[in-house]
Image: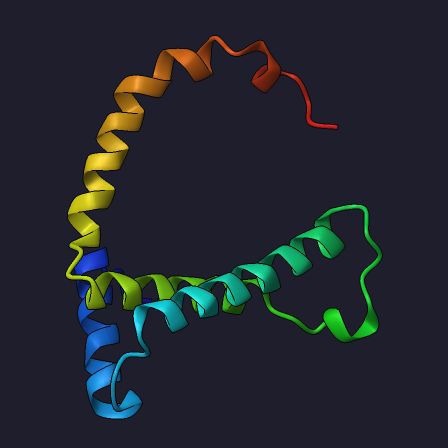
Length: 115
């Protein structure tokens, strides 16, 4: 299995779009597509790990594939808006590490077992 950073993933998606996808959908269409894909992830999580019963037709759904669909559309949106997602992610993780470390470490609710 190869390990790729976000920059490489963005380039791979762009290459796929240029050679197979004709062009990017417009940003509004991709936003709607992202919403649809997140909904599919939510359906699996709610039924497989939540309290809803899982329909027979849902049991064959692969959570990893659905999460990959979400990632693909996020990468498309980043590419078409000129967003360096690797840089943005790195900055966000640095902010979260500094801002949230003490907050999460001292949160007693996180130490309790989830319901």
